[in-house]
Amino acid sequence: MTMKKAKIAVLVSGGGTNLQALLDAWKDGAIPHGEIALVVSNNPGAYALERAARAGVPSRVLVKKELGGQAGFEAALERTIEAFSIDLIILAGF
Image (cartoon, rainbow, N blue to C red; front, side):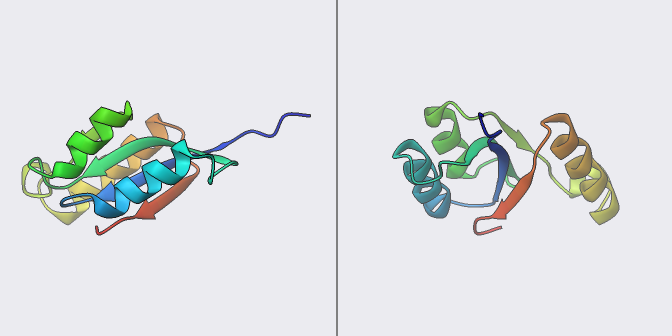
């Protein structure tokens, strides 16, 4: 019986050192029941987005101001999480 891996989204806003630790752990097999499937940032200049790209993990940028405020941001985040069928969200410096 093969167990389905949980799809993980990591929310970031800066340099991504926490994200890098998660990516390294995932690569090394320390997260055997999950896969990092998405990185989301509220900062288009976050270096964490580069870390995600280097790891081959898709990313999205959701800027509250561009989405009409907190409610717009939350709605866009919910749509994004659903679109990627995310099971678990990790806040990594977000």
